[in-house]
Length: 366
Image 1 (cartoon, rainbow, N blue to C red):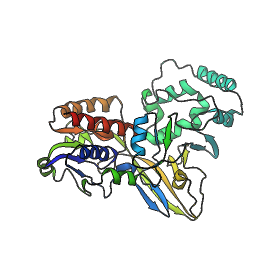
Image 2: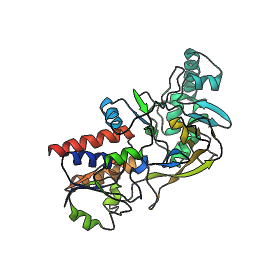
Image 3: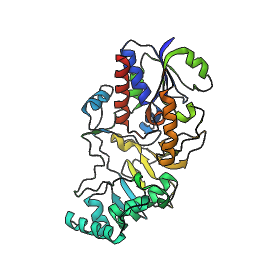
């Protein structure tokens, strides 16, 4: 008999298992994939740590979270400075003075503000009814057309006029010459990859891979006093209130016989006609000098049963469905629903770490 069965060997499950093991609890961790680490899993290829499920850059303002992660790995000084390509033009991200100079040829914050204000005023949008109108009312026509419209429509699989305005509550614009994507105080990549962190977190804990919780559900329930479920909450309840909507991703990895393919870890492709949203060149996360390189093209896809869910679609319809599942979850004794899929909420890695530590602390006090 285990104290906890943890469904999912991703970041949340691994941290929770580690903390409960320290508290003297016996845990079993299972995962349907053939590896630990969930979406932060990294594998070695050509001497390069490849982020198998897309770019994962750790950043946080929470000193305790940063120090916790650094207790399992040394982090380098990588700073996320992605660039965007639109019809062979190159722009810096996030929207900053370099971006504004590239679009309009201006040099001062005052010039940039004037152009943006004029374009916003020209749209005459007082109450945005969809994402397109929301974006236009924030940044104007030029930035929207070149850097938001196509990328967003690819990412969500819908026209911007069909997406709700609240998806873009605000768009960060920095009137300084800085390409640092995150404002957080701490930022970096674990030297040697994320999988090493998962290995240390799960050291001494029993782990079963390629394990389908739903195929042996009754047996798993009998094996533990409590269950921590990090999978899809609607699947857990057999889609009783209907399927929640997710967005999926497909990754195409390629080894190239060159030491430097694009000169940046992340390059976004913002025009709709290019089917992938970005190309990741993994060696640049760790300042690699290997003779070859590995690149990954990231394709957004519609989620269907059997696909991997990556992003919850938190619109009004799905929020209404999720609320029904949340009420069921509250009444499900002995089960903790956690993480991006269990809570049907988008979390960055630092949020996941904090949530897992908070839940572990509550369980220790119980």
